[in-house]
Structure formats: structure tokens, C-alpha cells
Length: 166
Image 1 (tube, one colour):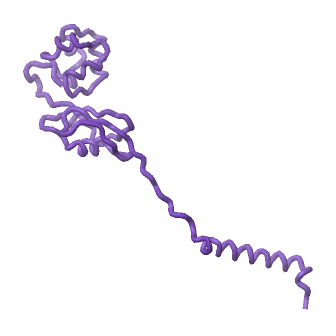
Image 2 (cartoon, rainbow, N blue to C red):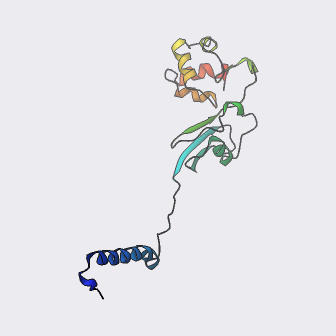
């Protein structure tokens, strides 16, 4: 019988078998891998205009504008649904405007959401630069939203209010 204490290949084979057994049995002894918990981040967004409950909402990351409108109780009658991109993804801090629907030529008012730049320039005190900024800041839920347009202050808004509609 051979003395295995001095036989190098046999020692390596025995060590390899022990290492393999340890690797296979170790997870069972320790209890296996810890469960993984996936946490969905949330974002805060606001909705204004023609929804039942306008305000700020916390939604899951990946939510869409349609989800937000649903949380806000849905559209009010007269909302311009066609101007709201329901499938658009939401981002943290976003403000979604739901404008009111205005019939073409209703009360002879100019629609802030659909008028051309030339139609806006026909308004008193609105030149090419202001008309361009009005177009750039669309959509509008109400005439008061014009205050966010550079160059339109409270006095100009009061002159424009009877002439415009969202």
C-alpha cells in the first residue's frame, strides 16, 4: 500500500474534492442568498387646470400623464382632452396643464392654445416677440397663465383677459 501523505497528486485530488464539497454545501449551511427587495422610487408632480382635483401628487417612477389625470379625478367637462398627451411619461417636479376647450370663435376670443402668431399679434399690446413667447409657453389652462410669459404683467393681462381664452 502506498503512503498517501507523500503522494503530491493524491493530495491535490483530495484537496480539490474537499473544496468542491465545501462550495456545494456552503450555501445550504449558511441559508442561501438573502432575498432581494426592489424599491420603486417615487416622484412628485402637479396637475393644474381642467381636472376634478388639481394639485400635487406622489406617483411611482414610470407613471404617465394619464395616470396623473386619473389620480386627479379625471377631466372636468369642457377640458381640451386632445391637447393632453396621456401616454407621455412624467418626470419629478413636472407640472401638467390641462387646458379648457374653447369652441372656434367662442365669444370672439382668441384661443391662447391654438392661435397662430399672427392672430396673437393682432391683440392690443402684443408684438412679434410677445406673441412668440405666448406660443412657447403653451399650454394654458386659463388666461391668468399668461403671467408666466415674460413681458406680460398684471396690467397687460387685464387688457387681454376679455379678448382671450385658453
